[in-house]
Length: 313
Image 1 (cartoon, rainbow, N blue to C red):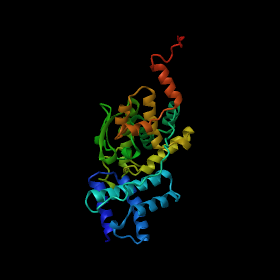
Image 2: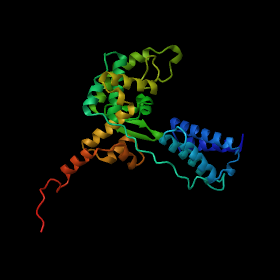
Image 3: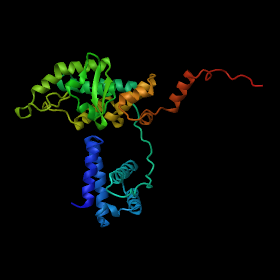
Image 4: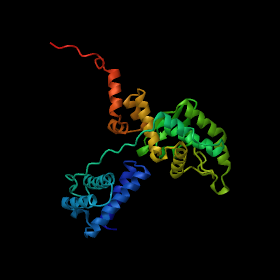
């Protein structure tokens, strides 16, 4: 194993153990740094101590000229920065060659929230009353009611639910736990699914799968834990029926939850806690409001906004 491979391995362990990154984040770092390592090897650099600021600048230029989206380029550079900062901080390398390396500006891409009428149409789009239909309704209601991520919904276990008090325990990014409220409509849908649909799906398990995913809330047709891909399919199928599939994803439901709460007067920090954002700035971008909405709130809230102008002098 070369010195480069050794330090990449050390960095990966640090991300997993010290920072507690989720599996998806770890996979993204691994992909980005594998691309970086391939670039270094092509330049016959196997010792990280030989990596200079000029080498990193050339790599950034290579990324910028590639077909990668600006957001992917920025993430790749952030991964390289993380690797070199780790190596310098831990004393593996004498300096950090990325210290003065800039990254391309990434235009803010915010998913368009559904209207409240569109959400209502979506939640009514599931057909039938069988086990799978009850599951789909419960999943859609929960994604919108709690604003949780698709991965958080997939990972839910029965012990995470406290439907009597209307609370949900979620394990978010970086293995950070938070408790979020669940509204009465979503609670009713979950109760109906757990009482009827989930028991039927669980009974469909084969002997080979018994004992696995026994506590999973959302099950597939074979009685195992539902996958992220299946959740996507459920959302898109309901969107097709509601006529809004082209603008729909599980993330749009999360965004719609936050946007509608703000529209109805929720405090920004409350929404931050609900979504599990580490910083308020993330929530501000996530819940960007239109100029029209901003004007309406200003007119309603500012004591002098509606007063007729008085003559001066």
